[in-house]
Every structure is written in C-alpha cells, then in structure tokens.
Image (cartoon, rainbow, N blue to C red):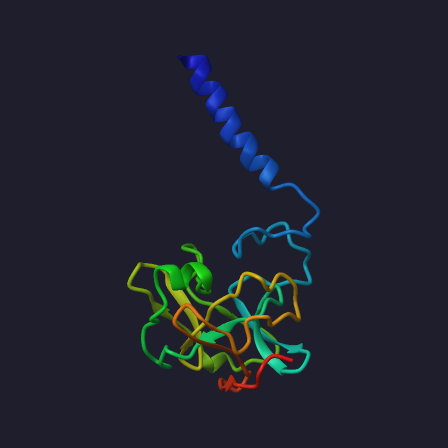
Length: 169
C-alpha cells in the first residue's frame, strides 16, 4: 500500500514537473505564465494590438484577441454560460490574482472585473465582459469577428471600449 501511494505521488508530481518544462512556445492554459518568454505578459494583462483588417483591438498579454458578446450589456454581469462559455471561454482572473493588468495601448480606467454567477472573476473592458475564441491560436488572429454563434453575435473591441462591427476581412 505504501509503495502504491509513493508511486502515485511520484506520478502526480512527475507529471506536474514535466508539464512545467518546455521552450515556452506552447501554452495550454491562459494562466500558465511561468514558461512563456518574457516579452509576453500574463493572460490577465489587457493591451492593444493590430489585427489585419480591423486595426487596433483589445488582446490579452499573449496577444490573443479578446471578444465581446453582443447580448451582454456593459456594466452588467455576463450572460454567456453553459455551452456558450465552452465555445467562448471567458477571460478569467486566476484565483491568486485580484485585478487585471493594463498593458500598452489601453485605458487602465476602463479595465475591471465582474463576478460571474458560477464563481470566478471575469475581466471586463469599458464594462464589457471579455471572452476568447479558441480557434484564434496566434497573435493577430480574429477568426471569431462578426460570428453569430452560441446564440448571439461576437465582436472584437477597440481600445476606446467600443465594439468593432466591421465584418471579418
């Protein structure tokens, strides 16, 4: 029994150790920040970056585009839950972080959080709850722009806090 427990502990901690190794080019979680190159901020950083055909948009610290759900209302709790939140994961703060970070090109006064009814804090910008579109895997992508999906329309957000309603290029 003791040998089995020791083996299980080694497997668990060995897996954690292996998961922490790598060259920093692949991040499986928005909160796995320790292995990223230093030029990238944490996932809970919000900054502005250029996206072809859309101009400057709000992105996370890794450069991944953040979206707003047209059915949400600025300054109100998010409405995307269940399958919607599976398809469009909310931009959440990790439990050990109490506020998002304002990066280059955004107005720190527009950055905040809102409590989700399912528990965690979701990052907001200009009152809009922010979300990811999982097919966007690299900085500069905005493949979720203008999609009607999960019951509503999705837009990228300008650094001024206004949804950009230009169709995808």
